[in-house]
Image (cartoon, rainbow, N blue to C red):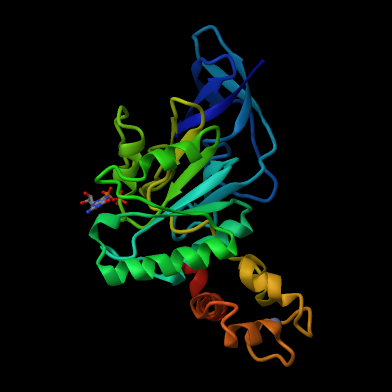
Length: 311
Ligand code: GDP
Ligand code: ZN
């Protein structure tokens, strides 16, 4: 048996990079049923696996190591199954633009909360700095102050002009990093700037192995020349569904969670309860209004059943 890392998945074939440095095409042997997830792909990029090479030069995947985390999305709107986009992430880079197109703080905060729920650290990359007006720059600096204070490292880049790329490259070194962002924010341009020699394709691949006609998007994992991997997943909006109680949502807002220890009730939802330390902190601007609004948005959508549909 050899051990390795799954770096690509197209339908029923997986490409595994062995610890000895070979790339081997593999299929799954036997039945992988993972606890708690019904997924269309039992193995995903980022998984550590054991393989049994065969005479044809391909191999069977015989075993999969426990995951430290993974991200999923629903396989299709009608399906109850999930598609695992990637596993064992060290970090996620959320690429946003404050204009062209505008990324709302609600989107950023939902993304951050879902990443917390999935235990993936996030850095925020603000792209297209070459386009911003004075006023937009001012707003940008406000957001950077806000998010760095909460504990999310921020970077500014212009992917198009190649500014700030070295900084990004050095924070990728040695890690498995997922790139996510709204379409149009410049994710592909940024990945191309980081990996100029790669032929990056982000188009969806129709998965003939799945029953039905829906399209599945596969993650691509690129090896970085000085160590580490970058994962490009087309169209990731968040890290899956929020399947949590009202009083748990606040656990995934680090700034709200820190203060909620002082609420009178330990199941406080920070809306109307007496003795709520969070409400007081919002009033005193110790918690940003935008963060509290995003928090309320998630609670409201949960009540309407909208939140699940959004992911
Ligand atoms: P994706 O959908 O996130 O992969 O976005 P793309 O990489 O396709 O970029 C969307 C558009 O934004 C393209 O027209 C890019 O040329 C443009 N773009 C990307 N990065 C920058 C940047 O830093 N500055 C400017 N001015 N335009 C950019
Ligand atoms: Zn409270």
